[in-house]
Length: 298
Image 1 (spheres, rainbow, N blue to C red):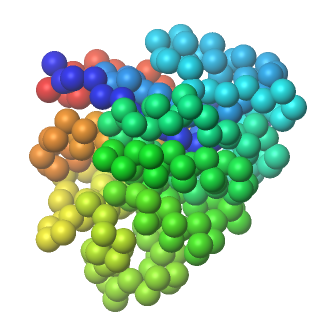
Image 2: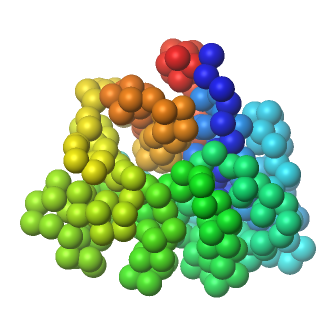
């Protein structure tokens, strides 16, 4: 049985609103939930409002036996919300509500203590749209100097720029992004002539241990100092799913493998299977089937 690791999701915690239906969401939260389901200690570092959505979020996480001690409560701002609409091609489109609780995440002694003992951290660019949370995220990462720090590039609307991406990549030890996001970074940093060249160049430019690129139904590739790693993609029926959270599930699997020092082939097999399963379901954090949890326990 694999030893449980402390895997932190640092940033936004919110609800995705699909019409009248509200589902738990936020990329860092999703990563922590899936890390918990894989047998680790998934920990959410975020801030919520003192409202019904905040209560629901805590109840949901407690129902998954997750520690909620690092979720702060804001007396004035509401819990985060994202309005999700599905495009004709089946891809989700996000309208992210601004001026919410996770925009003002505070750095305190509890977060400092957690940063020193975390085994891995996943953070993104969205939660950096406000200076208060951005500074808290940077302080947390600077404290966690000996920890795996995964930047989930996760570009959303106008909430990123070259300065934020540069500083985030400097503080990260690894990065995960999709093909569209790699093209954006290629243009921003003039990385390379080909797709693979750009991924290798991104790793080298920011001295990252590895870069993971998700390619939809083709699965995920990982680029290290001298090699590209792949595993067989997984074909599933996604006609009843919404694809929300599939990339976050992949991030959780990558961190599970990295913290347990798995070979890349084993890690990517889990990442492809977990990402494909979540893409075939509705919502970002569905319960995992036994075959996936058994795969993680090897």
